Image (cartoon, one colour):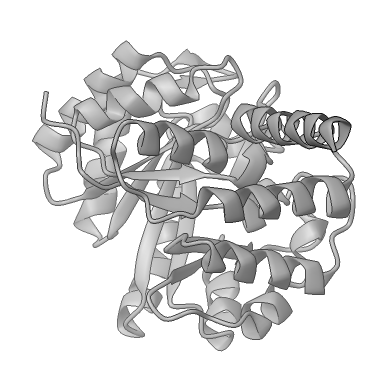
Length: 313
């Protein structure tokens, strides 16, 4: 166990992972506003969109327009998801500085999600990585269902280790460990992160936890105890994997930042500003209730305070 970090880097995935599964179509200008607003409140890493075929994820059909329209703040690490070299070419044309590739830790999830087995998926990632490296772009990789698979059950750490070693050998800069259906528990998290840090020491790691069973924050804390300093989160807790039955939303950025700041761990995020962005995207744009416990509680507290003040006036 290592000492807790003084600072955590939050990778905001709301504009992509948060919106991709929403039934309500979000206009391009609203997506652009969301990305810009998230940068304005202090998030230093933002996944803007995904360059995927619109037949599979219609919400991301305007990826090029979003990526080229966003006002990019200095110091913010902007990224986009790409599934293959065609998607990479579109992301490169939009001058996206960081590309994210993805695959699964189990054969069944890989075939359901990508129509490819693990070996085929790794070769597809290799093509994108080589192209990106030739262009001087950073590559981030998501590895889904590393703790538990909805089709195959609990995933052995050795399976994830084997894939991580192959990804590290091709020069992936950062590997995000995906608890895609929220099946992980803190003991699993510590065991896997410890093994990865010991056996794949040159690979930067991040945590990507879903809150299906209410354990995302506990798993985040467990990962921090093993040295992780980067975590993915989604504004308001929006999102989930469209190919993972039973998966609820991502770890909420609001909940994560509130916990970390309460522990004295800096994030650089303005919580009040983030709350307003959350209220706007969830209520005004999507017309949905806010999944985040922190945002819901804080908005309720403010509403009550306003009513009390009005009664006293």
